[in-house]
Image (cartoon, rainbow, N blue to C red):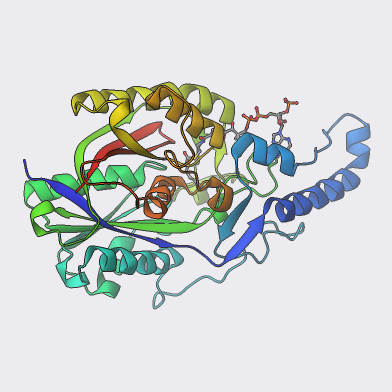
Length: 372
Ligand code: CO8
């Protein structure tokens, strides 16, 4: 079987940030206004008063201190509480394509490749700004790449599932150099009026170049030794927005938003994640002692530490299982790739590592990597 490597990675980080303090301050102003507006209904027992959010809770429960967003305007205004931005016309690339273009250029440069070398582009993310034409095809045109391109969505596991598709395309002979982009424009899907979830997501885009080891000229590449994908249906992380919404006589005002049962996700997903990683390690004859790094999905600090401990059989050193949650928050499918991109230095040839995503579906995507 042909050896396939990740030969470059890229990251686009929006300039604007929102700290927990800013977010909680705006949320608590909204709570005061709501409770004042509905004081009578609350006093009569027809409605529950809203509770304040807290920075202490957010940081302790999730590890998140701040997040990047494409459009900060509107999010913190208690009368608006959503990103405010203009609809783009057909002549302008949508935000996701624009973000992907930046991340792609860095990944190509790292891999020592140009757009002319790329013959497959996969845009893999939790949301697409339109169903068709595929965002990946617009990116293909803007980059000046040939070959073919398509979009795919496996929520938080979109990046790892797309890398696995890239490996299979290379081994199957339908592509030689694949660009995978993960533009996660999450902020429009966040319900900034929900105390349970207003703090979770940030916007970002990652990119990776996947190619045959025989064509790789990158000074830092990782051979994909093994891949294991797993899905198991759950309603505990869900979004129902879709093109049929306008047909319903009673449109659901919450339909566009991300919803989850965070506790259940935590409990049900972790055993699945540990099983998938351990099964693939066994298949590749890789032991915990061989692992030099764990680039894990970034949804929750406690979840990451728990997963790393289960895999390593001991507490992880911070550098072994790097966290980017504090500054990036949960960035869906991009999270494990950000951890990889920012923390792939410092390993030696032959060192083994795990790159693993997990999230809605449920879905788990695990890659066992070896530094070339
Ligand atoms: N401030 C203060 N208190 C709060 C807040 C808040 N903001 N929110 C909740 N509380 C309170 C609750 O009311 C509760 O109080 P009480 O004990 O009195 O009932 C208490 O805090 C504890 O609440 P929880 O049990 O809900 O808190 P947890 O400790 O479970 O933490 C988390 C909540 C952080 C959400 C945690 O459950 C978690 O991270 N779980 C894992 C979830 C996960 O990994 N999800 C994956 C989602 S990402 C994904 O799959 C991609 C989807 C597609 C992307 C979409 C892009 C937008």
